[in-house]
Image (cartoon, rainbow, N blue to C red; front, side, top):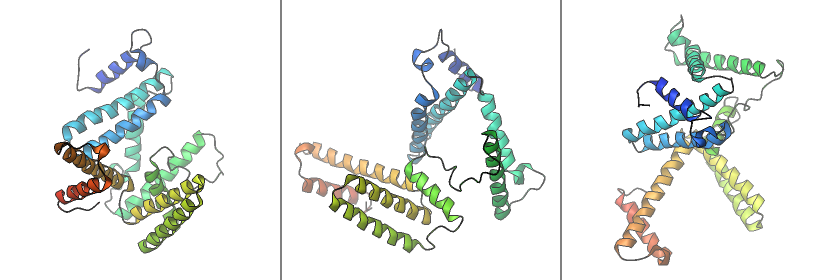
Length: 275
């Protein structure tokens, strides 16, 4: 078996890995459920490579993500549900169907026309899926029903509030969202004073939800913003570790004041940026 640029070779390799007699025991033992965490992880690694602007790494990570699609398609084919060709056909059909302004008889570059057609097409797709699932035709779907539950919580909060905002359920001004965050923070403090962990968890959830809503109001991707801050925290903490190591000190015995001094030095080293 040799590497190739052709998708057929990847499909052949995946089928060989899943062969019950001659394949890899680990691959053969996997199911849709056991592979899901890897699929999610690979998607995040793609995002990480993009954020780092590492194109060689991005090529590898996209390959890993593609493998996840092939893996799921192979397992589905084994069950007689669909195969990789079906996946490709489904997405090409969807792209053509959702872009009548490009592939249809009435081309348009008017954003309002494009948006209206997109919404109408998606509504039709939802109705078709409900019919295929055997749901009653007169059953009115909830506005938020199809917001995926498995996506990261910050992203889901943004999608939920964005969807609700379409029907006017939203703060009209960003300042009102900021005020709501202050209100939620005060409630967190009250919960902490009560000492009831369930209440603290509930109020912190409300606070995070409000912050995600603020990000949406500011046209900021909350998930991306937090990933950026995570990277910044990691970078500055590594600076502390390196500085301590170079001075012959151990981080476990270093005081908080000493680490705070080094943290400030790390911030100054980043062109005066603030955390």
